[in-house]
Amino acid sequence: MGLAPRQRALLIPSVGASDVAAIGGPRDIRGVRAFSARRSRANSWRPSRVYWSVNAIISVHDLVKVYRSRRRRLCALNGVGLEVGRGEVFGLLGPNGAGKTTLVKILLGLTRPTGGEVRIRGADPARSEARLRVGYLPEGHRFPGYLSGIAALRLFGRLAGVGERELGSRIPELLELVGLAERGRDRIGRYSKGMTQRLGLAAALIDRPEVLLLDEPTDGVDPVGRRHIRDVLLAECRRGTSILINSHLLSEVERTCGRVAILDRGRVLREATVEELTRSGLRYRILMEGGVAGPVHAVPGTTLTRRNGHLDVEAESVGALNALLDALRSDGRLLTEVTPVRSDLEDVFVKLVGADAAAAPAAAGGAS
Image 1: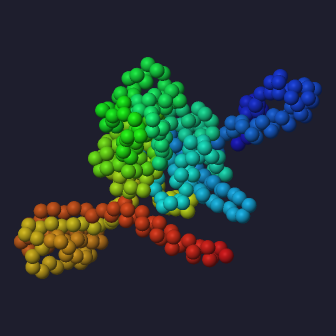
Image 2 (image 1 turned 135 degrees about the vertical axis):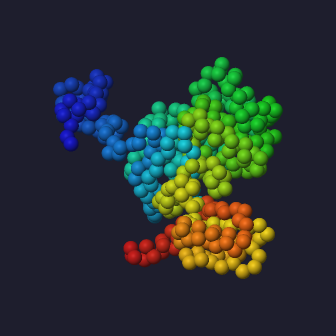
Image 3 (image 1 turned 90 degrees about the vertical axis):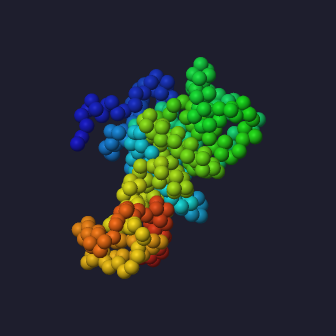
């Protein structure tokens, strides 16, 4: 659908007096038009071809990033698309070199995409307003060892534009939140790796962000600290903060994230909820009083496996499962538990990435 003349005019950047002087005076109309066209192509807003979801805080559509040098061309991202909603914890998974860090850099405006479109809080990440209220915790971050925890948070708060009066109440609140209330005046050089990681999370939260981008947030943290960080993130989620986690600790992702995307070779292999990814069909574990004693016979449509005092059952249908349960009860067995069996997220991850790696040489051979 075409635009009306008035609409087209609104899309052309205005040309001021200094601009006219720069191109040779007000009479050079062709120069004005050429200057406007160059300026429009360089940095003007244009209507997006993508209809972004209303509730999406992070929107990525057909994202492509290619790094070029004299000798090689590396496609780090190849048509990546995903969305993160308000108040959602989203996991970004993938092996080393999958493109996760490149995607985070694009979301932060640190690098520009080769193709596709990205919006964070409704704006292009290259614009400074898009990065307001965005907290970031990089992997392997470092603080000056001579600063105290309080001084480091005050420094990051000032850089984020937080007023001194608000910092006076915000810093003790954050130190208490991450479990460093008693160590805030100590030098960071005396902190352990886990304490430094928790201080980094506090720095990312200093200006009450709407979006959190976390790269390995529990790296080097003990189990108690990981649970503490997980509780903090879930509390932020309930407050409405959108969180994108890039992590190799799949057990933590499984406990924290509602949805995940698995990347490999710059492509999204699968995006789904954790429940959808780990669901294993009609597989169940059956516990019986006294264990599995004596012979147990399967019914049509079921497969039984004895394992560590219980039965693992794979059923073709819910009806077949119920027929098996009826048969066990008729045999005088007392059932104490029937539990659906789920795959670990790690098992799903390894299977998907392994299948993609196996398919890559065949695809390359077909292309050649």
